[in-house]
Length: 210
Length: 210
Image (cartoon, rainbow over all chains, first blue to last red; front, side):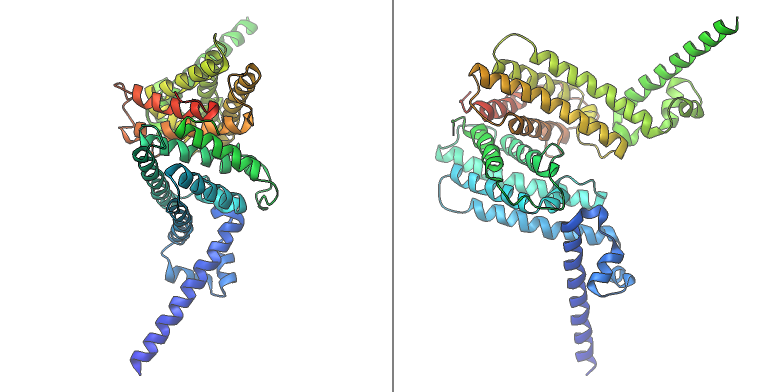
């Protein structure tokens, strides 16, 4: 009997943790890390504020977990797009489009993941995130060079240019997507913006007019 | 006599201010904004720490001034390169090369200006700085479209891609220039890195293999 109760408590604890994570995720997606308050997250999750600190050592630890979850989702989507049919250029274009469209549909989350000033603990996760992207792109560019659809170049360097061009265009302070209301996703007519970024990136890689 | 003394005092004050600014500039160039301490700056300038606060309301105000000075210098260099002879593509390439080589010669200052997490007051200056760059590039791209050496495109959007690609490559956490010791400029053999970034950028704009 004692064992069963412990098991039940463990399950309850896991459920509460899951609820906290899910509510924190929603808060960050709505207004960024800086505006997400532990008291709000606790109220949404239906737990006492103190309960959050039984699951996470600090707010920063909770946010680092949100960051990991959110970025893993984004990195998985890009990896998925890169593993579809077609030559490397086609696959890279699909992946960049995936990245761009998701960022434009969730501009606040994209900004939080890429550009929002964050705590050093979250910043560490961000570096890992950028590296994961750059490595995926680097691999695809190297494949393209082998296949012959992308000219010889420093694949690592070009992947860094890709990440920079697309991040600045979509979530940098100069981006039209950020100039629009941060709370509202851009639903209408982001095709020209996405096409213009993709053309720059693919031309940059291939040196062939699109 | 009273007037002459006031004038003398004014000159002394201006000299002290100039010395403070110059020493703060050196500190930031050496180790970034975060590591630059007011006490160190005061000692270097030969003034009491309190004197700094007679010239600047706060450390943030002093740093915002350093930021403005340093970025104006960089923006002027890019504007100068963009106003040389040749078609828009040649001028853009010269400006991007200027930007890249300066960043590689002073990697800490470049990182402080572009990527170091900074106080909101300095961040405001940073936005103005990025806009100044983007506007210079946008103007040159528009000229290139008129001249016919750059194909029709959204000049503003492409200028944002340029700024992103080059900033990420040179001072982002993924940059090989930052992976090297931050205290030491990369003196040897940065040509391949610069050439690889420039090729990506110019190909991105023109769609013509370099």
